[in-house]
Length: 488
Image 1 (cartoon, helix red, strand yellow):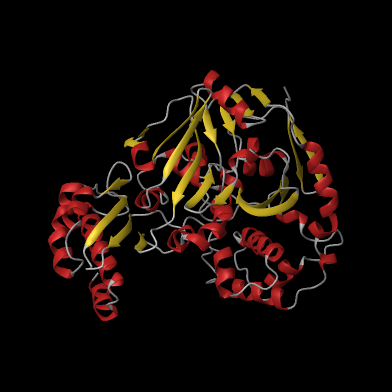
Image 2: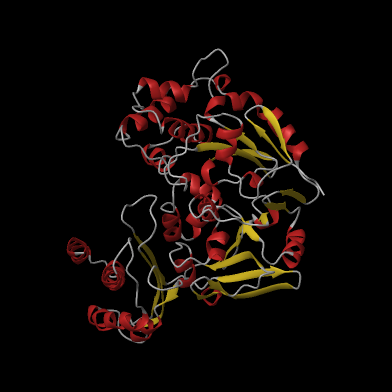
């Protein structure tokens, strides 16, 4: 057994053999290394003040992504390169071009959020030489600022892309080959286990090892992206023991577009899945760009979103509407079930304690189908869903409903099909009269709750209105749709 977490912090090799299972990267940076440029704002991955870069080898290549240090656990960092704001400027004090652009464009006022914005812009600078306005705004979705109004920050991003200096000014470009070699040397060949006074963390060497660990440790908490589990610790102060980290397992990170659908490994992040899904199922890709900010999408996994079983998880409703199949694995082998059957009740899923989500198969929409996904939230970007509806419709040559699958999140204790509504629609002509006749059936399918995101009445009316919106879009009625949206 290995007994230390090893990673590179800026330019320094770090080896830790006494790590709490839920110790966050933010606490380590600020409290133990005094790297205080990384700020704590929300402690829930929402404001971006704690943004850092984490570099990892994928298929032998080094990729850097922005992450939220406040909900990223140290146990997930083995064989990675952590880059903080302190690493950007040259030793003589010369600012990095991204930092200088923020100065030139007056992109900072109180300054608290500025390091996080700089790191997000730096991540964009590394991955996209000529970002357009939409790409810049997407990169900044996960960063909040109450002072500048964002326009100066966007101008800084535009300036540094228009007048991009030589890569000799960039510390990561200078040391890329060296960092790759050092990360290769850190790769673990055995399962890593660290025991501290507060519990154990385990980093399995393979999927086979993961299955054996769960068989022996049925109370273990599996952590992939920690975008939800991180809040259990930072907000609920929960003690988790043991914690098993799986974000490094390459066997769970494949995504394959086949003839009939996409097979997605449980460890595939939203960011990694986006390009493939955008080519094959654009409506789901548009939804992904509204899940959290860029940092959350870089950390969070589709498999983790499903395994967590939240009734307001964004990915299950459209996947259920498409007829997705889930594969679970244990030492006894694998079993596959319809995704909709995985969700039993609030906090309960059809997964034994020794099982883990291995992969997901998502069929493409039928060639003659109409498919749409709608997310309703208080703000457009980086917000939790109040109601999410997904619709997959097949009509015959006479415009009658042959098949329809409707799934909602935020309407029940689990992601759920609107089966009574579906029954009212199937076999009937796809017209306004049919839609109006089916709307009352929602009352039989759902009895939503009132919470701080929405009232029960709002949710119920919104669910009905989303069906009407879907109908208007499918029949190409822009005038009616515009009038409907104005009323809604």
